Image (cartoon, rainbow, N blue to C red):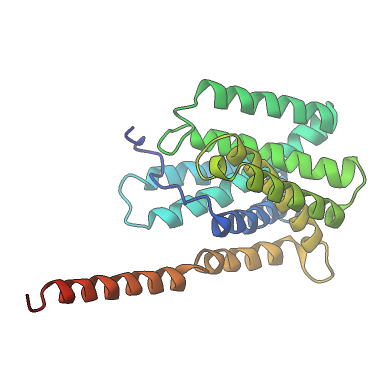
Length: 253
């Protein structure tokens, strides 16, 4: 299936490194959303509008830019995470429905999107990003609901959600490597975990939302490069083996 001209034609392999990077990106996006809405004084609606505008500009860049597709993808992940933070806060704090009602509505909408667009929420489909936004919003609302609504707190709540994420990826690892049920459950769980971690870190003495966002933004590319040396070593070993085989095959008959 050809990708849409305004869709980033890149999806990382859903391995351990990618899930760790998604967690760091979730912390960064959550802190950015909270900083924009609260510390910078834009409010939830204007903050959401800023994130949507930035996402539209990023989509426009896709057609003619020479920027790495991976860089565009992870920038979009952070921006959708920031938008989801403000969107979830709007839904849970101003709708009057409460955490339970918001979670049910978001879960039903996400299931509907994934059921209707099984093809267009896949690797090359344009619906991947709406599904990411919905799953991120659901994860944000669930994280706030666990920490605040249930009164569990951010650190115990994050520990519980980390166990849930590990269980989801362990039980359905084959599906998590594609774009099946385990993948989307993992997205919700990692967003929920990132919400609570961001809130906990941002409220440590002397940290704040801005510092948390900057540190996470610096850590994200470092996290993505964790496995790079190992991959280069594997390529070098493979090249050496192929060279040895060629030499042995071209030796004296």
